[in-house]
Image 1 (cartoon, rainbow, N blue to C red):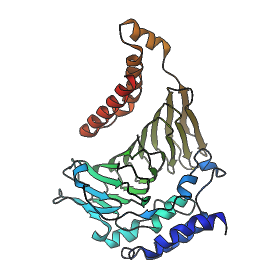
Image 2 (image 1 turned 135 degrees about the vertical axis):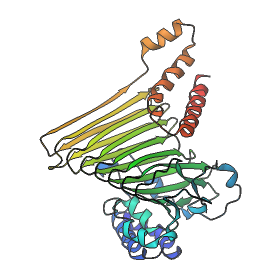
Image 3 (image 1 turned 45 degrees about the horizontal axis):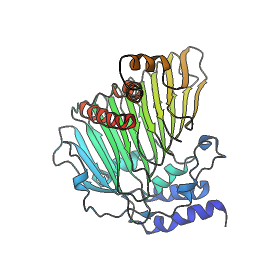
Image 4 (image 1 turned 45 degrees about the vertical axis):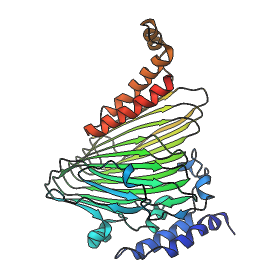
Length: 422
């Protein structure tokens, strides 16, 4: 038996025994599993996965997440517009919604789901997207009507509770934002318990012409979990899209963020990853300027301690017809330990001649002069290190517009760095 067949064979039973596909999606699921069986899980021989070894996922036999909800409600902080998924199953949905907003599951509008799902996050070259698509069941569906302005954040909360046996969940979300509409989307991934689990998530966002979409993803999986996610955003003409990725948990995490811009689009991708111990986090981003007059800004910052490993690969593509593109990408890493490792690779692929594109990456330690200055003012060395580390992360946190989310992240960071200082 080949290595690919051995890896994918373990998923065949789960694929064939899952409930029927949502209306109209059975051909998509079948095609996706066939492609997953051909691809197998990526190895470090694959350039896109050179620094991230997913063998621990490939060799673990995962069971499907059960629908049980015991004790889960107490772990979820309720918001006014919130979808809650527990172990991959839709648990609760909003009782009332503002005008112009739909938020529920894939069964709410099968026609819209069949029309858009899988069109923005292709699975032909990505085994994890193929596996997620093959396991599509109860996904999150959000639609904002043309011209609607939704002032409250729309939150999708994924809680996975580790059990005695390893479990897998495949969260899927489709978010359709009409022309001239405004909204904020918050995705939270939270782990409970000590068991091993695997979250394999895919989110597709379609922003209509002149729409404004502010997206946040906060990953706080348990430290024994695996987290693989793909965000694919298709951005309409003169639309404004921003995404902020915060990675704090998981033993192994991989975040793929892909944004395709139209004429006059504006995209912002920000990220913060904080890892220690033996944690591994990999951020791969692609900003595709497909049309002229597009603008993009990207800032990813990482803090590493212990024997942690971080990977950043940021690719900016400027197509032949995408003249007048303006793009800037920055990756900064703060390494607090001699054993932590960072692999960073910014990329520019430019096929147009009238553009302005820059990129840069840095890996460094705390500023010794700043440390000395704080210590000369009576601040202990450990506390001074904590303050400087907090300030490094604050640059990304300050860009978060949702006050409640920013406050909660500031508390998390304060506690994390305060503990480190003690």
